Every structure is written in structure tokens, then in C-alpha cells.
Amino acid sequence: MFGMPAEDDGSRTDPLLGHVLVGSIEYEPDFDALRAASTRIVMATGAESEGELASRGAFAVAEGLGTEPVIFPSNHGGFLGGEYGQTGDPDGFAAKLRDVLAEG
Image (cartoon, rainbow, N blue to C red; front, side, top):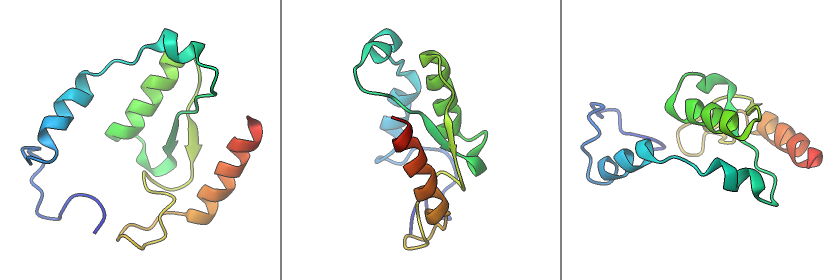
């Protein structure tokens, strides 16, 4: 099954996740270094993930870079076709990804 188990209570005390979550919340990217990178950086999020933690992160990093995030169809796992218990829009995701890569 993809994601957290159904019995998850949201406490984030799981030994495999809890210690990582605190560090990721406090992390602050070096935006000057990222903007100076020779590689194009594209922040992306799923259309159905609006307001979720990962989506808010994508918007915040894009803002710090002076860009807008690319919105992909479906959700955080929009590339999934149901093989891990979460179904997105893999065809729409692939089409959007081709467009984004062609822009570079």
C-alpha cells in the first residue's frame, strides 16, 4: 500500500518518520545558490494536492526562486496508475512532463 497506513493517527511519532519530519520543517534552501545553479530548477505540484504540505513547500520554494510552480494533473502521486494503491493520472502526468522538459 502506498502512503501511511489507514490506522495512522497523525501523531508522527513513528520511528521511521518522526525524526525526519522535524529536520525537513526546519530546512531552509540556499536560494542564492539555487538561482546560480546551471541546471534549470522546476518546482511542481499536483492540482489535487492544493494546501497539502508538499504542495505548500513547492509554492514556497518556487517563490524563493522567483518562479511559479508547474501544476501537474491529479495529486501528489499523479504519475501512479493504481499499482501501489493510489491512482493518479499517469497519461496526463506524462503529457505535462513532456511539455515541461520541452521548455528547457
